[in-house]
Length: 555
Image (cartoon, rainbow, N blue to C red; front, top):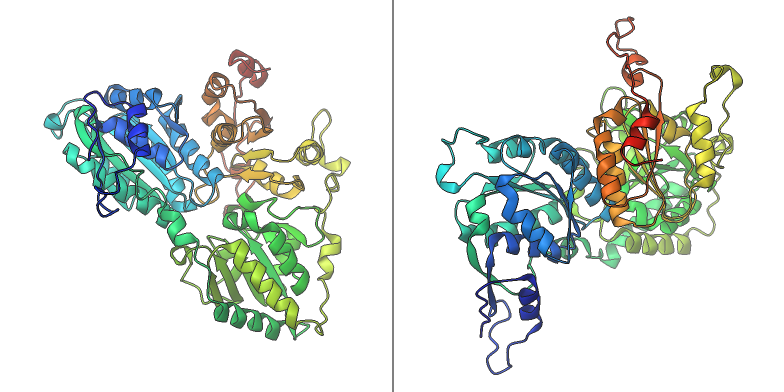
């Protein structure tokens, strides 16, 4: 039983999948009984829609015309034309981060530099463990390898960037199994994958299955399994044993995958009398006006701020919740593990196995923490513990409480800490703060206080990509229309993506851009690089940023 459409269109495809085979003709559910004739480009776009992708970020060019035409023709997805493919890939990675665990991002680039520009965002996704599908165009299949214009070995380049799967589609029949496998890999391994499709293959007609892409739910299949009760009981008992020693101190560290378990983290912290530190892109996961919140840790690979650093020095056991990198949490200056570790994460593939762990709990974090807290509470009635004294000294606990002394501020200038303290009081619920890389990142970690529901921070955590703030604002604005979006950058980082202000305007995304202007690459110039000399070549001759923003349609 099949539906044939001579000129395939997305509405025909959706109509076909709503039909059901008569019961007397129904075969094994694994067999794809319905097929629709459509182009490879149309099928790829429908697969993206099946995965919940609503925006595709990229640059245009002759080698991707059929693909982008298919995006523009499908009402379930929107094409976002970026001013540079580098920014497209960074935005797509931020989009995946913003969507959450099973949220796929997608970027597109044409042949030659259009594809090579995408590699920075690919590395960003690989290092921050984000599901990202990169699709690039190629010259006609028959001319690959000897064409004299924009003909590069894309698969080899993207494998070098870290893609575990990077394929060149040589024939139209490859697209159905390969996009299935790439999506499954991206979602289950939280990584970047790549498909290069020649322009004539994009135009080729295939007989596509009318069913929803079978791997679109691959992430949910591996992320939604609760541990057995016996395992949770054993974990709770291990906590009880540690709690009986009043000198044994805990620190709870929350990463991006623990954001949705805020209430459960607070409940565990109150039982253990454990301060909570957050990784930068999980800032606000626990309201920062809560007495247990001790600020950010692991900024630019450093232990972080003064209070979290003191707490970590005495910590006996680190409880990590959805954290990717445990270096600053578990090791000493010699790189060797010096603290016990209990970890909660959603999937065993995300566990950082280079360190020992007292216990590892794999499953939906909110549900597993809920049960562990119940089990601990039922057995810990007679155990008395005290909060660490340092929490009472913490300056970040209340918005606006960070102190900026007059001696720190030059006449006629405003201190970054003062700006961020004031901003903290103005940000509403569901607002998104997108941070660039540089001194602004450190100031935001220190002085910005997020204490309202569903506030988020987007930042380039591992790669440290300058220009990230405006790209993050694009991702946040597309996923949270109407929410307050703030991009915070230095005068160096902002100029690496300021051309995307035009993209923000074109897609009617409201964004407040704050630029800290000091005329220098501060993170380079202010760092001690070991030789005692002040680094040279860091000065910036800046444009008039206000006039430039107005030229792009801002105010």
